[in-house]
Length: 171
Image (cartoon, rainbow, N blue to C red):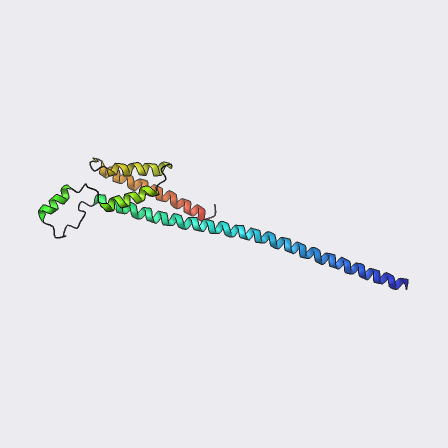
């Protein structure tokens, strides 16, 4: 009887040990799952943030490129309307005389650019100042100002593109 009681006691102890081990396994797997879930959530948030910022910068780059191109096209177009728009030679001569007058398309594109610039950044501030020079219709260095705007725009767009690539990598 004593031996039978001892084996029942050992069986109960072994059952208890098994239950404790199973409980520890459940707690450990729950903890690991929780840590992995937090890590995944953080990674997904960072990935989503980088993707959103990259898309916004790409949109900004494309809009800036378009507005700069439109603004410069309006400045370099000596005839706001087509040469063959049914105007007389006298009207064409008058149009040439007034060629330095900036069109609404120029001002719209120019204002879109200005509103997108962060003038606290050196490169963007330089572009802003060159655009202000271009606004002057009696600018004797208009061609040089146009070249400066093109060069600064290229640098600015490249700089922003490098930021897009860096953010896409999650840095």
